[in-house]
Length: 241
Image (spheres, rainbow, N blue to C red):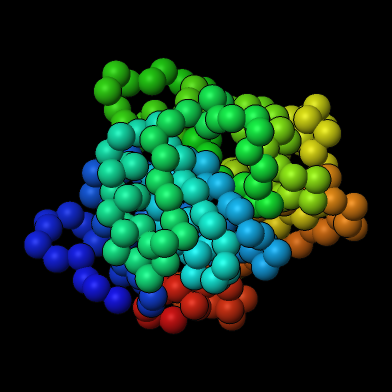
């Protein structure tokens, strides 16, 4: 794989690709990697990554599914510029497309097998002017209701919406899923350190008639070492695993 050279941007290197994430509002983080490794990709042939940022989730999906065509959409110009660079320098550049635009304005005739999103999650507070990171993390740009309703229109009959949220968003997502007639099919509670309370929730919503499943995932032991289940989930990506 060619290296991204001659630039001073922060580069995050994975086993099969690398990501420039200097200009994007949202950097590579645990939430995105969790979702990229956890979302169901096996049967997907057309995938949409909503709020793609630097494109890390889209790249992870491309690594896990060698046939899928993947589009990443984001309203932030700098994010899309970096996503395009990262896609172009990946081994799967012919299957990845970065689109600058608003998910809420997407053509309703499009149909996807999988929509994946690490959405903005702050729902309260005042937005500082010009703070790109805060805007990227704030549901003023895309609410859970907008994401779920939009996905309900863009997914095919068997399609899946997969997202990650803080635990505090549980009620909002359950309500939005019921309103959009896009039932929750799987829910994973993410525990940062054994013995702690869950901090994140991983969701699968779909009209597909499958049994509901609920489980948990612990990232680290109390001594700071990663659990075997987290290594099994993310080991194909992180260099040190």
